[in-house]
Image (cartoon, rainbow, N blue to C red; front, side, top):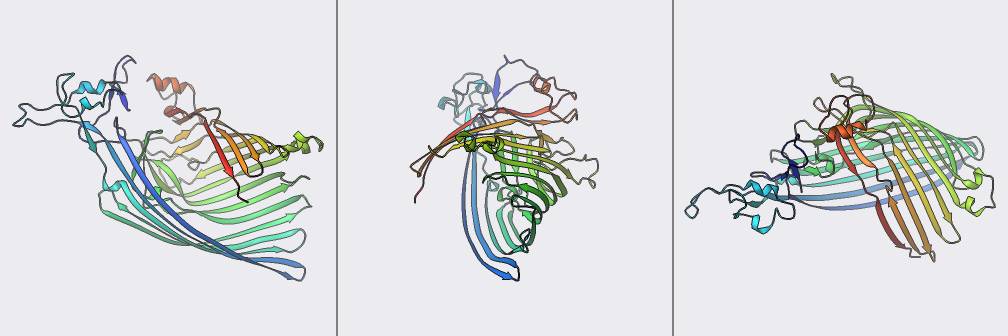
Length: 489
């Protein structure tokens, strides 16, 4: 139920009024009901062949393969809700039926009772109640399909015990179709057919049996999803934003460059690695804020962007750290950590008055860490993982709205698992156990961080340019799930 205080300056003792439109239902209307149905089918097939040949003292493996996928989707939505019942005088009614505004102040357990629908008999001065209305339009449905045909050639060449090259080319033909109506209710069919050639090369130099240096280049693509193309307008009840697609979106292409040192300790399943990377993105897809008074999100391509950074990763047994192979606990306990630092830049040089910023959704640093214990004798396991993501732009702003950032938060996940007779596995998962608040904000004072005092300023309507504008503040409850799986051998 959506209630709104009559004035922002009024105290909490003032009653809240339900938001009911005169003639139309909106997603934010009190008592509105949104129904949606999506039917999607995906059919795919993959096939590969390989052949190993020796040329003098070198060994080469040749792989050929293909992938075909057909995907279709049908989506339809309906929006129902209540509007104000009014009716002009008629032969059977000697006066105009006007809406009884006192109904808007009723408790949510009473407001839409049967006696408040249609003509009503009090309370209040007038005798018009609510009426059930529908605001569904043809734009609230769409059909979409895609076809992906891909083939590749890969060579894995070992020129010596130390030098290895893995290189090849993948060709992809992608055809995508969207059938819907545009905002003016004209039939809209969007057909896109693109052929991409995606080369890759990976060079490996073995320093010894446990250490390698890798250098790699590869080209990838990021295609817009059906939802990002369809003009259908969806209201998100959590963020209070309305999201619509953009049928002019183009696919993004990324050139990736990596350099990596990796070391494998004496026990299997362990690794220590350090890498640097550079990504050159063309037509990257971003979420952007719409213009106007309604809080809305759209999708757009940004011409050029770059990501560059470094990554540290390790996965190691406690037995290796303490040099003790006799301890069952140390041999069954693994520590793992992944740290990434990313410097992201979007090319805004051709946009007047726009400040430099990172790519939407890209954090300057990411941390994943945890500990896992597996008891092979009793087929029991427990793991604890921790995740922390630095602040990131969640919605790109415009001339009227500053960028909207997501404040960092700590995420802790737990898992217990038990296997019975090598066939039945029982898992208990607790996700986001710390349940910290999810906060979206605008950095009004431009100090590069979220000011906690802004929570009080926004709540008490004393907001000023000295603090930040809180766009969303919600606590995400922990998610607890139990799963049971059975292996057929």
